[in-house]
Length: 235
Image (cartoon, rainbow, N blue to C red; front, side, top):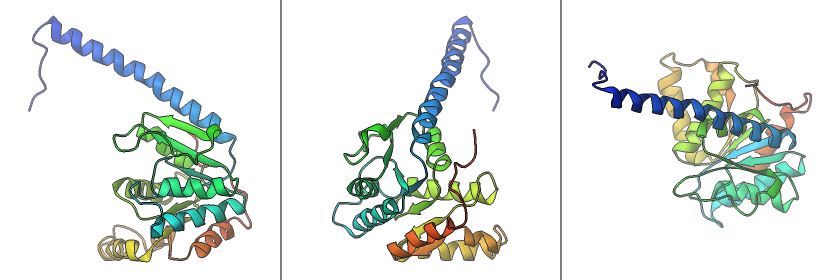
């Protein structure tokens, strides 16, 4: 199918106007990067915690996220989440209860308005662009803890694994919590990706699966026994 040729000056002017708006959006994107860099640089070493926004307080994984974030904060790390409800709220709550650094990277979505009340006021950043927000999740995280979640959680998980696999960022610990949730996916990865040669066997070592929060926290802390946490890739 051939692209449509401008039939008159009105169409050409409309295209030029749209091009101008697109160019100006670059400055909005730059502004989000600057705000994110300035805020998160002050936070120090953090762990990003991902998971479903639909998990309710009192449920199994909500309470596990609270416990995990509390333990991580006790070990000197800040907590970064998407600032929304569910697992994000639980993780921020765990940091808040421990007087730890509780960061919320908010984004305007139809079902997730505003950041949860456990995010520290000094560490609230709101984004318009998903891709800028995802850079912040990775650049200032020294590890990832991933609870059960939907498409967004899987997107964040696989993008992070890809960045490590392709050496765009340093290797950092990725911990999956919940065998009942993750084991089926891991079995599929082994059957379809590994056996067909789409990944290397070593790639399976890029993440760690456990049901035990204490084990998860220990795995992350042990990783940094002999190394100093620092920001990841630079943009």
